[in-house]
Length: 110
Image 1 (tube, helix red, strand yellow):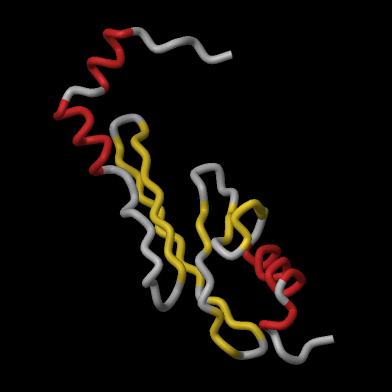
Image 2 (image 1 turned 30 degrees about the vertical axis):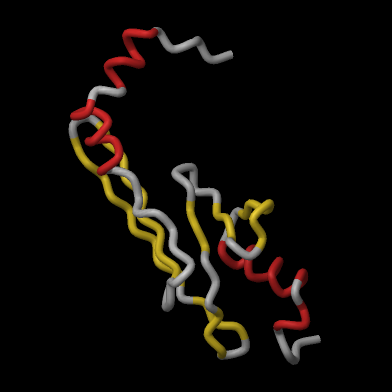
């Protein structure tokens, strides 16, 4: 079980300069007006180094572009905006789940 945060720790974390640094390091908020490839940016600090990993997915099904929002968490778990309660090990698994759950949106196939 996680320990409770001490009041002094909370005060230090909420200090404007420290909170500002934390917020500046967060990915920009998701908008629903995205077009083109799905892109996720993850950042971390490690032993004094700032690490930025940008993952971009450009998805097609049967040769047609699929405008789908995929997001990769820091632990590598992938989620899909179209199936918000699901988590996937791969982008391919997420697209398979979209086809299985929304077959009317994918003409052809079996």
